[in-house]
Length: 419
Image 1 (cartoon, rainbow, N blue to C red):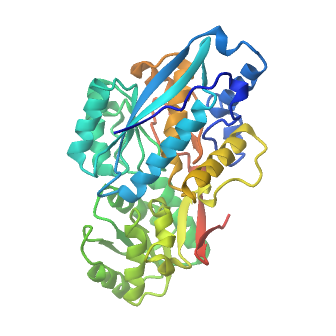
Image 2 (image 1 turned 180 degrees about the horizontal axis):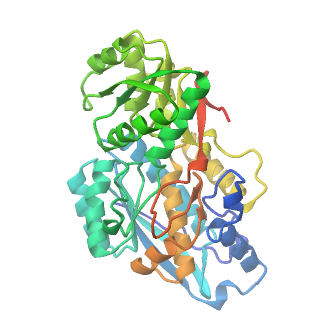
Image 3 (image 1 turned 90 degrees about the vertical axis):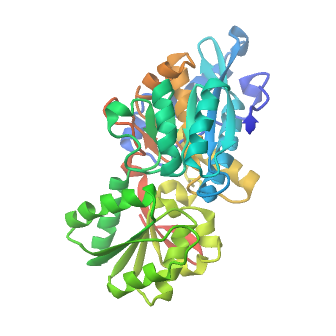
């Protein structure tokens, strides 16, 4: 178990002037945010103009619990989330969040669920009952998140899921405390369809992982392809981890598609692309955001990725070059700090840091760390994050806003933005 609480600064103005977790774009909806980092940034600057701001009230702490796949299934992405939590907590605690007459700081308790759903459920219970957390973060895989959902709903504690499973937040009457941060599968599939139409590729094969993540893609893609007049020639599921992909790859190649959509999380994504290439396929590949990890390009199958497309939030491109808004500057500060600590930046990383932004904003709005009051304030207006904007509402609990998604292509071992 790991806990992070950065030492509290003597005064906000003596600390680094970083406000954590904002987006890179200037979208109209985001410019009109009613909550989130734009308002937090303004409040922090105001505090710096008042010498006695921190003396006016006592400091407070909010304890958040995270159950992540640091080992086992999902560990490639789980480790990125752990790193993002550390950087995000340091960013927010360098100044703190305005909280009534005082300031609020974050403590994050992190546990490794090993990719085991039963372990994730028990950890969620322990975090709530023993560590007294105000909210839960976790579920890089759909399978671990599902078990955490039952715990969160029963105990009425907000759970911010880090995956793109399409059943995380439905049916809504049974998911009142669950919020999804990963982009919705339907939004990803829709952008894939538009790219296929733009490229003039007619026949499409789908190769998806045999898990909840792959299920989401398999369900979303037929409608998206039909909408743009593309033909789905076959859908093949990858064997479970540890088994060769040769048979699945040959089934894809034999269907003779123009393009192959690979819907799987890293490191399976690149391994699947390599296997299909080895089976003789020479057409286009399009991957979902689950492939957006460093290992996809730098791992043993990185060379096979050359020329492949990925649909991903714009943050995959790294720090924004033009950061003229508080949110843009915060995004750049987060990316730079992440690179400074870990050597490189991964596009999948920001989701956990965005969870901290969302919960810190909810606590500021509510002037409370009570779980049920946090839940209500998460729906108090759009909130900007590193990956993009989140606009939770009573009738919708996820995920990332679709305008954050753009296509990239792999060129010379790097993600290159296409739009």
